[in-house]
Amino acid sequence: MEKPKLVKVDRVKEWEVEKILNKRKLREVMKYLVYWKRFTAENNTWEKEKYLKNTKKLVNEFEERIEAKVRQ
Image (cartoon, rainbow, N blue to C red; front, side, top):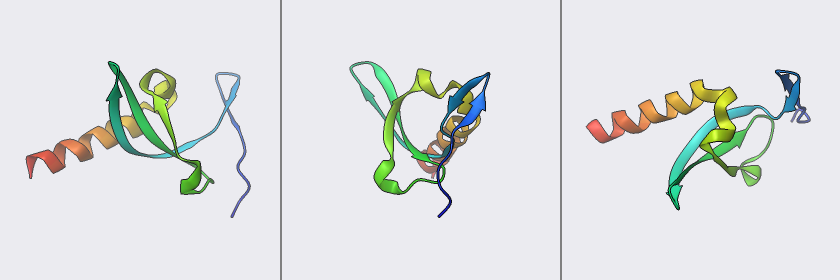
């Protein structure tokens, strides 16, 4: 497995998100379960929505998957 590395986004180093796995609302704060690129599932973390602004595409894809499941 390739060693995880930070990427620069707007001159700030960040870890890359590979996929959003789940979401939950806790005390009126939406959090998403994040699978980090080049990490194992043991390193998944719950992150506040506001911290995922640079990965909005993946958040939107997750929301669309959830919505499609609900419609079925």
